[in-house]
Length: 126
Image (cartoon, rainbow, N blue to C red):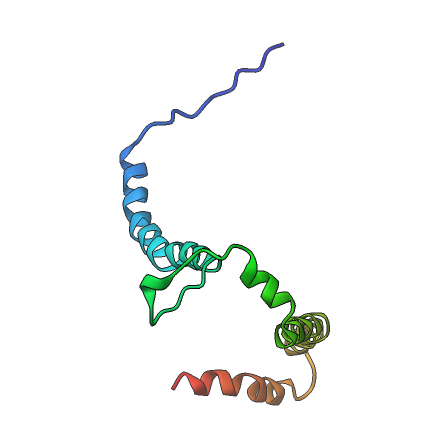
């Protein structure tokens, strides 16, 4: 027995054009303010670009990255980042989850805890 499948007709309908019209400004702005600087940064990382002397730029290849691997401050910052991610982030997420579960409980005096928990958030909006 053969099963008939209905394929959607792929054409530009009025709804599709409306959706494209709504998303176009976001795509253009994201491209201008995120994608273009990202690509330029990657390109500049392979040069000795100096903002004070833009005409004196020359291609250096991987020399900048090799120099980074020999820099003790950079290595220390990478180690600190990994320590932070491994130790602090799980602890912070676990504590936040525990506090969120506590807010949801039906306990005696929970309204005072909720007030202390949510007051900084609500008052900061004023």
